[in-house]
Image (cartoon, rainbow, N blue to C red; front, side, top):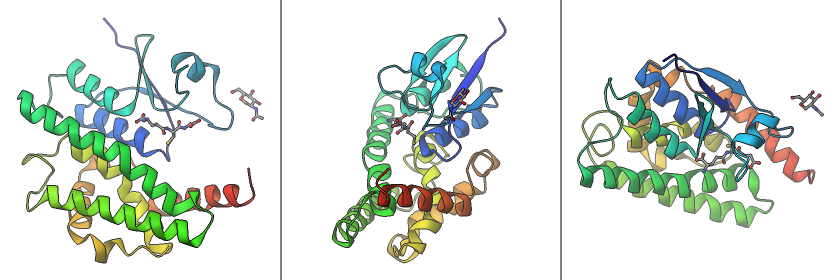
Length: 221
Ligand SMILES: N[C@@H](CCC(=O)N[C@@H](CS)C(=O)NCC(=O)O)C(=O)O
Ligand SMILES: *[C@@H]1O[C@H](CO)[C@@H](O)[C@H](O)[C@H]1NC(C)=O
């Protein structure tokens, strides 16, 4: 059967980006539809009525929501190529644990630091929390080339989209290169993969988005 694969997406979204990397790793062809989050499409509202968020994968008309769920689905459906998740149940649980940790922490803390806080004190607190999370991840990485295993896998895919934020973090006063050198080194290793570099917005464009969101908040929109 011909597969119809549609992704409701937003180029600047780290959650959208991880799905794009998953598809690229699997060599899956799909139609990407860019959403305007200030004017969501009726398709998005129909396909993800609960959260009304991107990314949404629509596979032969059926929606799959939540980036981590989508990534695992992609791995199961297009199972022929290299695997993104380990097959061993314990290893798989370990992978899910770290994906959840990243999902619960990095975006919230990075956005709090970069554009969601209105006072210097709140921003400083968010900065400390973000660095703390990255240090936890650095500890988990240890001296391995990739998270969890020897090869590039689902944990790496989930975390790497935030690489494009590092430029913004530095601009806003978080010296990520000094604070977490191993994470930066790991990121640069991942960025050498075309599946990754081609799926991400540039650091400069990411910074423009950050400044735009920051101004929106300050002007009370
Ligand atoms: N937990 C969700 C988070 C997705 C998410 O936060 N998407 C944002 C864009 S980065 C969104 O669609 N926001 C629209 C809104 O909140 O109305 C996932 O992993 O898919
Ligand atoms: C919202 O999107 C619809 C269709 O996607 C478009 O026709 C409409 O002009 C948009 N409205 C605004 C305010 O951008």
